[in-house]
Image 1: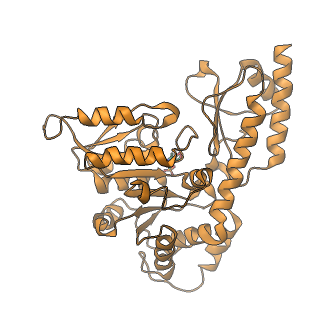
Image 2 (image 1 turned 120 degrees about the vertical axis):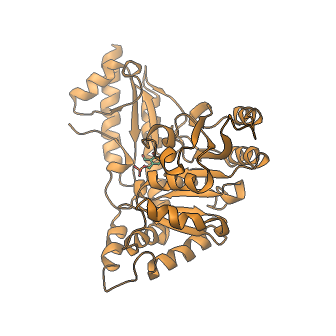
Image 3 (image 1 turned 30 degrees about the horizontal axis):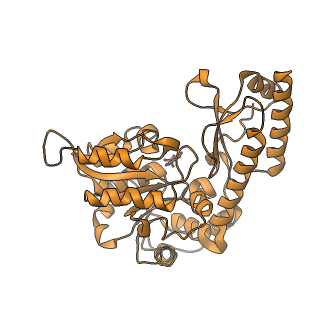
Length: 350
Ligand SMILES: Cc1ncc(COP(=O)(O)O)c(C=O)c1O
């Protein structure tokens, strides 16, 4: 059985990134980040973000998130995030482990976005300075979110302002950073430090890299501990040129933006086609490359009979399915799935 739109991690590697890996393979290069590719990447990302940044390439989003949080939270810290946040749901306690025991404090909100009023309320009553409670340490938000929504710039600014009022740095899980960026059609600077973000997990793997992410610190003076944290976590690659070259190729000729635009467009096409069918309900607005959609069981069965199966999400009785598009999603496949869904939906209402 083929799982349709299972995950953007199921997609392969963008050809220019594979070519860049082959090109970087010539000759010797300094190890542990002393290579030219890493130096060029830091320059390139500093240009892109319109300020000098510190860059720490690594290979997984979980490491990027966990180590970012370890850099900004003490072991007795409280990290404020949405219950659906990847750091809470899907990292096997990595953030808690790497911070040495920080506590994730969950703040609800619609569409997997932290609700500003709730965050302000919880922080105001956090019992700061009382050693019976964790010390508020950081706010972590995901852009694009785990529900396929995107924080607007105003929403980001508002949350960051609340964090700033309480002296907390803001971390952004940008595992789908490019998808959010093209959705908002703004600059990388606007969506990060200009809105009040201090540290970013910059994702590339889901959007066409082989395995490459980077922690980006917007105030390089605050990045010193990350050298140690990354090394002791086993994420300082000896042959770091192969991470850096992936990220350079990712940014070259706007590959990252083109890939993300395509993935988002495919999700929009799916959402439009499915949204009109009887009994089908989109859980949230589709603003990036993920859909969470309730499908009637008769439609699920009808689609499965035609060979189309999707990833079930949440409680099995709920009928929610997750569909994720990627940089290489074929529009013809989207249309084939939509045609099958229409047919199954029609049969089920007859
Ligand atoms: C929102 C989010 N953050 C981070 C990650 C990073 O995960 P990984 O450690 O698998 O690269 C993912 C991957 O599914 C994700 O969806």
